[in-house]
Length: 210
Image (cartoon, rainbow, N blue to C red; front, side):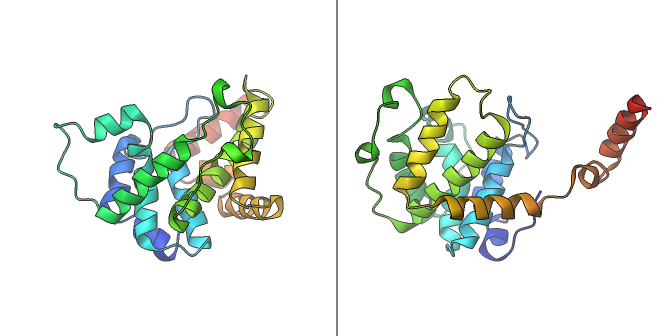
């Protein structure tokens, strides 16, 4: 996992981060297709928001967005059996506004013919930057793990391209941020040697190659 600094690091000490960390199985839950830790989306998004100079409340909202964006998660987050919320009210407001903007254009058959004029107005700069973080991070993972293998690969490629154009993110900026994030991760060997279980897995793989 990459090391964060500044407000991004502070965000990992908040109730909002703790909530999404719990939602993702104490940080251990992985995406079905790629096997990537789901919490990476939050960590890498915080890195991008730090690069964009965002404040702590926006980063707290970023940590909250998976709990509020889709209907099932929103219903679960507001169910009576949940622990009493201790979230920053401004972060909640930003996360709800993020939900409105992000859900206005999802990659679905009903939106496959959308043009830039169909994408939502984004009045808040904080939400604009949250969307930049989301689309850069998700596009990076899409191109790394799913491009040309996902059944809707062409539609997803167009979806991310259109969002980044709407957000005024150039290909040069996207490539720069992608390369920076990739460079912050250790090599596969360093990662596998980072704890005993991974070291045993690496040794087993080496033995199979002998």
